Each structure stands twice: as structure tokens, then as C-alpha cells.
Length: 484
View (spheres, rainbow, N blue to C red):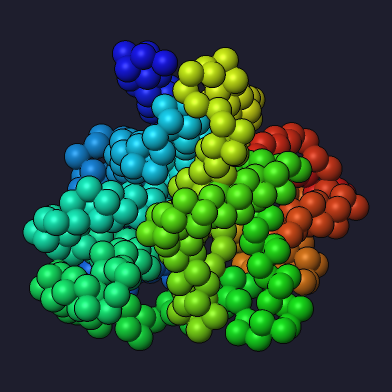
């Protein structure tokens, strides 16, 4: 492959990925429960108020909140303002990942394979327009790795990257610890001490700034207990002989390779390639690169065992590039064992093409990506609402309803009945909905808890007639007429 063809391919993948992310951004899917909970804070608070603990039990890095607040203030359409910063983070992440992949891999086809997997990963495209801090976590992780690879001799750059990252992402401490150890990794103790002295000002500045940030914004946070309860299934036990320990690891490996990396039933193949990649890094004596891939994951697991930071789901989004690098290095190692050099282009061209086809197919068949489309349900009520009708808001939909009511999406002019939470006692929902006899009432569902919407509808079946209904992704609206 010529340099011109290679550069064109890199540009094509990058533009395609950004184009898809921008399409998803302008599709402007509904904000779901967690998003509106933080969005309500951002649109109601000024920059100073965002420095204080957030309402609705939300927690987010200060710099992420300030950036999002700034963009919301300058965009006429609030949803686009809320989503532009994650999109910017994704665009920057594409560039950083390619630079990191170029450092890891020599073979142009392998570099393209890594870029294709990153650019067409549905998980990244979705979170590129999610009103949460997970895309900025990804940016910070890649920025720190990029800095220690390409600017390890520039202490001013390392200092600035570290301070910026601490204020922007809660995972920065994991990546900065990894970066610090990477910078000082040497073969003998004497050289380690020299490196420690060399980066002393950088490490001390990172530590002091994190300590100040921790005391101001994290220590004794009022939402800490709530967050620990919410994420209680994401803390690993310290007993390695416990079945729960191994079940936790298996569950997360399956989640990472099958769901997050979208390998589906072939996840064990991806996991096998990742293991081969780690073996290849050991065989090729690239211990520092192996360290960059594995240590952040192991450190996060350690923090999870002390219940300091949950391990699982979207909280480990920032680690996906590490697994991608490991998988692709596994492919490169197999190439080296089979003695496939760049002269055998026909065989090697298959790899980036197959990867692009595999992930592109999964991505395009699901576009636009959706989560909880409450706006569609609200619009259905808007179009069919009559003045004598009531509206009941299921408790899981309350925050989203409030947000869309405040930005002018809700058009029906009535004071709704706000539902309460009665988990495990669906009959109480029925009493709330049917407060008035012989009435016509709309019921708006979103963010249903374990199929509660279906259970409620089943109980209502004997008491009401469904006149109109609308069902979409994790949201629905029903017009009910109580039976005589």
C-alpha cells in the first residue's frame, strides 16, 4: 500500500466515523432518564452553582459540567448544546487513537484495522451524543496515553495534560497513575530513581491538584452512598477463591467483548485475540506497551475491590481502546508468526476490509441509535390530546417529562398527575391512575423498571379500555377510558 493510499484510507475512515456521529447528533434522539437528570442541573444552574453538589443524585466532573453549560448557553436549541461537547470529544479521540495505534503497530494494514474498529464501534457512536461524561473519559484516557508516548520529555505538556484531565474526568487518577509508572519504568532501580527525580515536579503537581480537587468536590459527597447502592453490582470481591470473584470477571469479560465491543456470540474469538496480543507483547519484549494496555484495567479492578470506583458498564467505556489495541496486536502477532509481511498485500487487505464490514454492518443496521424515545410518546399525546383529558406521568418518566416541558416540547395544556414509585406493589399505581371515575386519561411511560409498564397495563385491562396507544423504544403512551 502506497503512502498516498494509506493516508486516503485513514482520512476516509475518520470522515465516515465523524459523519455517522454527526448524523446521530442531528437525529437528536430523546434524552433518557440519566441524561435529563444531569441536563436539568445544567440548564437551571450557573457556573458557580455547578461547583456545588448536583440535584437528582447526579455526579459529574467539574470541567465537563462547565464546558457543557457554556455550549448550552450559546446554542439556541438546548439539546444540541448539551450534546456538542461529547461530539467534540469523540472527534478528538479519533485523532488521538490513530496516533497511539501508529506507535503500537508498524504494518499499515494493521493500523487501518485498529482505526476501522475504533471508528465504526457502535458504542462510541452512541456515546458521542450522550449527555454524560463518558466520552470525555475516553478523551482523557487517550490524551494521557498520547502524552506519555509522544511528549514524555516535555514536562510542561505532561503537567498541563494531567491538570486538565483531573478536572475533566473521574477516571483521570487511574490513567495518571498508569502514566506515572510508565514514565519511570526502567530495568534497574538506579534509573528508576533518576526518572522519578526528572518528573518530580510533574508528579507532585498532579498529586496536589488531585488532592485539592478530591477535598473540594469528591470527599463526603452527599450522593456517594446513593451511587454505591446504585452500582453495588459493580464492585468485585477481594476473595479470589470465591465463586463471586470469578463470576464477576466472567460477566464483565462477556459484557466487554460481546456487548460493548459488539462481537456478540463470537466474543470468545475477540477475547482469544486479546490474550494472543498480550502474549505477543511479552514475546516481543514490549513490556511498556503491555503495561499501558493492562495496568489501567487492573488498577480499576483494584479500586472496585475497595468500593472506591465501580467497574462495569459505561464506567469502563474509556478502556475499550485498550482492548482494541490488544485484539489488533493479537492479529499482528499472528501475521508475524505466519510471516505475512506487507508484500503479501492480498491476504492483509482482507483484515481491515473484514473489520470495516463486520462493525459497519452492525452499526448501519441500527442507525439511528435510540435509547428511551419519550419525545415520540409526548408528540403522540400532543397530536391526539383533547381538553377534557388528564395525563398521568409514570415516575420513571417524570424527569424527562419535566425537561421536555421546560424546553417547550410538551404542548398539551393540563397539569399532569405525577406518579410515585411503588416498586413491587403495582396495585398502588392503579389507584393513582384511576383517581377519578368515568374519566379519560393518558398514561405516559418511560424508563420502566423491570417491565412495570406491562404489569400496570395488565392490571388496568379489567378496569379500562385502551382508546389509543403508541409504543416506541422504552417509552409508550396510552389513552385509557375507565369502564362503567
